[in-house]
Amino acid sequence: MDRPDKILTAIDIRRDFKTPEAVIAVLKGVDLDIQQGDMAVVTGASGVGKSTLLHIMGGLDKPTGGEVRIGEVSFNGMSEKELARLRTKKVGFVFQNHYLLDDFNALENVMIPMLLDGVRTSEAVGRGELILEQVGLINRRYHRPGQLSGGEQQRVAVARALANNPWVVLADEPSGNLDTATGRKLHELLFSLNRDKSITFLIATHNEELAGQCNRRLKMQDGKVFE
Figure 1: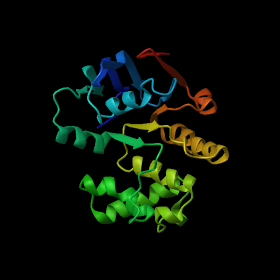
Figure 2: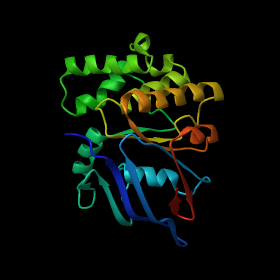
Figure 3: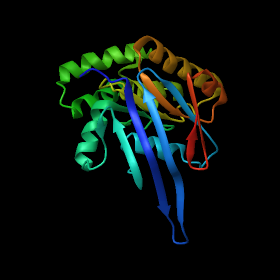
């Protein structure tokens, strides 16, 4: 299926969290369109709701109200199984922590989303090696996470996010645990994937250097998003 011009759409997204003392409104009516090829970044103070927004737009969390669409398909009314299937096929995730499986090597970690999607093992090996080559880690494909540096682990996490050729990659503070130089190398990788492979990114970050290089800059404040 060809990718639509409008990849992700948030319509009046609201998200409340209940505590014993009160109901806290974190998202208060967010409207947002992510277009094919965007390199979009969301900035804002800690606790403002950036991660919550990414989780909702990726189908990991459900809003209190409003609607998310990927292409023309609405998340509303989907079962957990249907959402999981959609995420596997069309959304890639990169988190601040790499969440790689320690008992598997880099190639096997990248293969997991493909195997979950029913791809044959032989095909998953070939595709996994190709993606690891794209992120500069083909020579480290048989190393387990504990044998890789922090930057290499995040590159494997990026490769895993690309495993099923997703429509969009959602990245939540992808360089937050990396030193400045290693973080810059990771940013260069993300920009090259956007530029050379037309991969669409929505990134939440505090990193001003990264934010300043993105073609769309969004700010979260008082539960809303401003461009």
